[in-house]
Amino acid sequence: MDLAEIIKPENLVYKKPNLLTNKTMHYCPGCSHGVAHKLLAEVIEELDIQEKTIGVSPVGCSVFAYNYISIDWQEAAHGRAPAVATGISRVNPDKVVFTYQGDGDLASIGTAEIMHACNRGENMVVIFINNAIYGMTGGQMAPTTLLGQVTATTPCGRDLERNGYPLKITELIGQLPGTSYVTRQSVHTPAASRKCKKAIKKAFENALAKKGTSFVEIVSTCNSGWRMTPVDANNWMEENMFPFYPVGDIKDAEKAGPEAFTKKN
Amino acid sequence: MGELRLMKGNEVIAEAAIRCGCDGYFGYPITPQSEVMETLMAREPWDETGMVVLQAESEVASINMVYGAAGSGKKVMTSSSSPGISLMAEGISYIAGAELPCVIVNVQRGGPGLGTIQPSQADYFQSTKGGGHGDYKLIVLAPASVQEMNDFVELAFQLAFKYRNPAMILSDGAIGQMMEKVELSDFQPRLTAEEIKARYGSWATTGKTADRDYNIVTSLEMDSAKMEHNNLRFQEKYRTMEEEEVRYEMIECDDADYVLVAFGSSARICQKSVDIARAKGLKVGLLRPITLFPFPKKSIAELAKRVKGFLTVEMNAGQMIEDVQLAVGCSGNNVPVKHFGRMGGIIPTPGEVAEALEQKLIGG
Image (cartoon, rainbow over all chains, first blue to last red):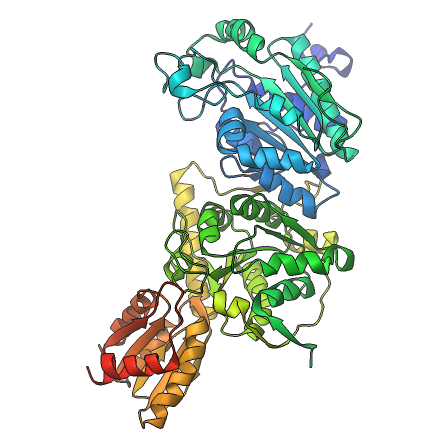
């Protein structure tokens, strides 16, 4: 069988989503961002909403998310993506707006913006990449860094007295009546990725149905920041992250509103 | 003749925004400008024109909402007062860096810090020299009347869109709070989605369609050569503004020996000071910069060739005086430039200004 025979439509079992651009990703090998981007591109493509989707990228490793998915993008200041998305969404109610934010961006410097946007129930999707570390700046402690976890600014491990507790912000978001769907997913196995894609799709369908804010946390690896191989990072995540950040739906309501409080957890 | 009303400066900002076809206002309460958002909320423009009005959780959020909405090609604005503008500095720098058009109203109060709620002009440096990080300029308009609070809203939007640059209306607590007769502008419709796509679709996030590549609104560029290129383009834009957009008013300067230079509230007071001085037989005029950036430096340099001195009158410790000194320095005729100011929310009286003129300049 030569190459020409292999490249036939009937032999096609997998292809890059059309919306993913051909730019080489700057993410480290093993990083979860690449998979998350691919799932996002697949969902936007399957829902056929390229023309009405506006993405807001954060400050952090995914600041360049706009290089990889062929939709209109705005790049926000650190932590301000939910406010930027609010502005876009409010004056463009026909558009589907999402933010893509890391844990430093969303759960530290941008805490006010994410809480208030979710509490107002802005009609938008939030993709929250939680890898428990600041990746782009070189592996410093994040608000989500686990107790005992070694980072560039907690060289002896995160210490409770010095650094306080890791923040379960997704559980807090689940308490806000403005959110209709709050879930925590991961992309470390094909099965997990499929579940995560379903969650992302539901979030975008909610935005199309004007169901307020939908929030998808993806517990992720940062093998470079964690100083591990990609495989070790996946194992470490399963052993250490999942017990503290359990995967699953936190809230799945028909619509946002006072009655849409947490069902689970 | 448009509709005549007796209104507060802050209320007029709101009314002018609705009438000029503004798409959205995002703000946070702060004295002495809270009437802007209060008036908008009471007017309920979402029913009348479809304009969005949103009370944000902070000034930080409101300026970033402006960033997002402006990035989609919409005509949007915010207003605040000095401490709130400081909080917005980050967002304003991003808006300038991403080259987005928007209008920011600063109804100044005295500082530094929490300062006072009384009027001040101490944000001159912050407004005209950047305010946030990086090399950027705002177009700065300084209204001296309630009428100009009306007129400058649409003017600021026109300039903001012409240059894809944030424009600031630098007012103060006196102009914001005082009531005057105002001739309101006629209503103009908001642009439709199709009009926005046709005008701004080359850069705004109107949604990626098959007829164009996708748009990215960003101030980020990691390649230093490209980032320098961006900076050079911004500087070229600012130079064009300096060539084409300078606005000022000259009052009784034709035969003047001495010229007061003042903007906003101070210029209103100085008009009376000119009368007082003229009654004493002193040939005094007033130059009122209307655009603080671009600054009317050429006109001041021209005046410097034939007058005996300048007195800047500002409700601050002496900020605009530096621009006047630079302009006079360029004239080749180094006549004295002095400053008279009050701070902390105190508004100078016409008499004190006339007295300062005699003491600091004429007698000195």
